[in-house]
Length: 259
Image (cartoon, rainbow, N blue to C red):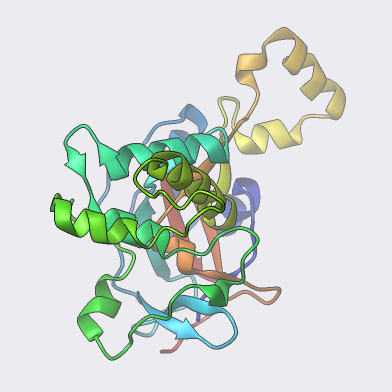
């Protein structure tokens, strides 16, 4: 399975800057977009990995083909982002119950993610006997506006004691649940106008000076939620590293990975 440690942009950009693939934006383009807070529009790349049940860790991602050292594991646009977990949850609620109607498929996906404070094994296992479902698991799908299916999906939201009235308080309960989902699965990065390498090269005194004179040039923390990348597990001996920039997550192997 894929396991990684959380690395920030300077570490990963130094490691990966020489790598170029036709199917993804260049590292320079990603980092420039991250500095400006720009959201790049790209086609997701999922073909190197698939969802699976990982013993002791719940669900995760495994290689679907041989991935070379430095090979592309995953490229995925963010589903939602914000300055806090609460902002991410608010965006997710807007996607689930948007102005164009409710999305039963997305609601099911979000409610199947693990939550902060709960074991990763608490979520239902993936039915691996269904190859088609495993291949499409936690990929962004076209909205499902079927109201009957949405009502069925709502039943997956755990009840909050002492009020069992799912109709009356569905929206606030969903928001609370999705904030816990974000806490457990979201990635941290930053919109960095000065540039990550430049900022970290400054002395503490220089950083304080910029903070006082021109706060707009300071890195601005952001939280990003990705559906497929949420399945990757953490490890102290990782086989992959990630970079979040331009509202995308790029995951690369740091050694060959065999299915």
